[in-house]
Length: 273
Image 1 (cartoon, one colour):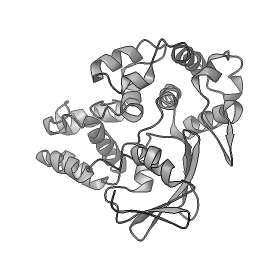
Image 2 (cartoon, helix red, strand yellow):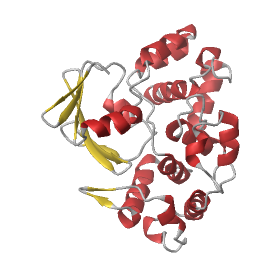
Image 3 (cartoon, one colour):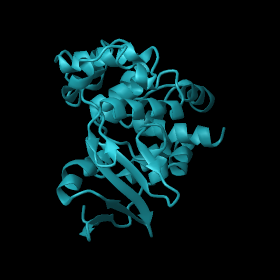
Image 4 (tube, helix red, strand yellow):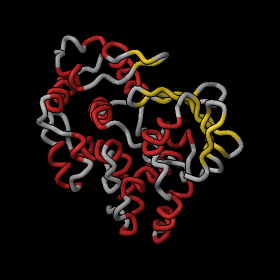
């Protein structure tokens, strides 16, 4: 990116378009980002802790090296995608275009697949504050400390645990699903990295082999953890929106980028509820 500058141990993304920190980090696709009273967001992903803030139209990142940004954060924040072009693609449908413009700062995060898998298993029949609490306790109890934060535990660590071991995180019925997912990944039955290269339908079928993973969780993992932007997770809100605004079907102009459309629709309907 020719608008990225490295100065005084900080990374500046100048005049970045379609990247609003609050819209992106607090829209329900990731659960480990927190803002402070000054609008500085902090979080940890793949054992890397950073802070971000918006400043005069720029995004300023603290705590990341040049190599970390180029090798990890650039892809994590999906900075190689032209979201303006995606929004323009959606202009063929008036309602979807309005939703996209209302939430045009959302980017789809490319999260570590195992963290995404466990996070959305935990999300089932749950609310966001409780999801965040369970994930925080999971990391504090079983993750490696990285400075001021705890990394998400890897599959091998969780695969050695029992439901009783997970009792401190208070995940309820989801504990057995977390362990099943960890054992299938650690044992090689499920290769999450390979899902990024498979076509969407084939990748989805593999995820559905994990206990507790239904169509919605599988689509969340594929969208947020594997880069399949054609995945379209459907919860109660989205199903209602499809019926009310789109005749029950995702608009044809969203083909190939339905996951981005889903985020715009979700933000739009929640903001206007």
